[in-house]
Length: 262
Image (cartoon, rainbow, N blue to C red; front, side):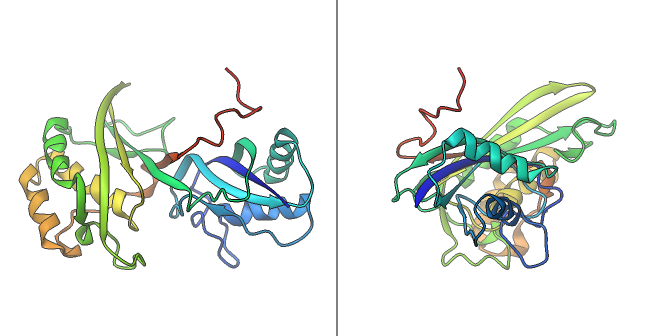
């Protein structure tokens, strides 16, 4: 068996999330079905992160084990052919050692959250951003985000159905940038950590948005975190603005990919 790492892009709207579920459309299930058409047998792929329903990916990483010795180009082309017309694409593919594991070898996950701030309805960005109409004070949001950096008990900012063994996580970065768009501005959140709790990013973004809109003070976030109580959290941001944007490994498996173009 030869192991391959796959870099995957997908639009999350049609799916219940990454994880395979019986009789429901998932990204994992769609890719495993495509692999079964290439090599007829049961396939079980592993991914760096289990994105929720409606969440997108720019660079999800998964690995699969194949009986045939495929060239990465032909394998990616074959998978993409059998994924049509679903909004999923294998954008890179490389052969890796057997000890590579998309989930357990990952050192950091990076998420992008896009917030469109304008009154006119989203058109080209519809389904790809969270649209809010009230202007956001990015400096207030940045001040609030400083209280979340580092290692904390994030009970307040995780779903009540989260299955993680501990609520303690270390948040490496929460950066915000503004980008002018027609009729408004897009605020992009860059959130990074080794791993995340269920709904942690969306809970953080939803809370910071309320700070930017003036509903909460920046120091309120410190009190929310200290409360260790889900009821203290602000609203959870909707899934359509969230993207798994990058996964970091000790050695980038795609650094010398034959599919990469300069």
